[in-house]
Image (cartoon, rainbow, N blue to C red; front, side, top):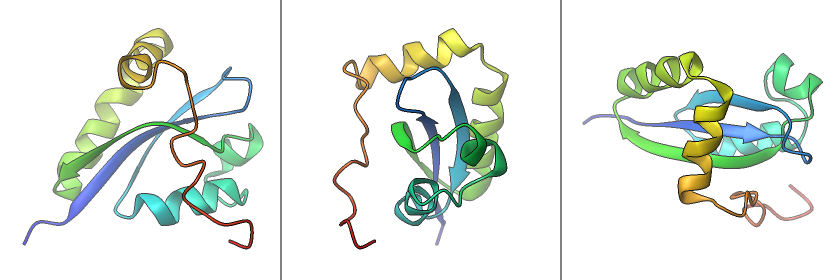
Amino acid sequence: MTKIGYTYLISNKNRTVIYTGVSSNIEHRMLRHKAGRGSVFATRYHLTDLMYYERIHGMMNAINREKQLKRWHKEWKWNLVKSVNPELKDLAADWFSADE
């Protein structure tokens, strides 16, 4: 059985910084980002809003996709986000309760 992976793009409230990440559990990873316990970079720049994610079969495939996206220009990443999330909403805004 192939493990599912997720490649994702997160941003800050002002949408000035974008970060590319990968996880086998997108919900848990976003909970960590929202709590300020994500990566050092994401924490430093207050990157808590999920802009885009892809569900990918196989963690190695997800990691390879993450590496590909990390090589992209910032503008290309934003174009990808806007293709599925034109209003730049936090896709994980209602995933968690205030207690979480």
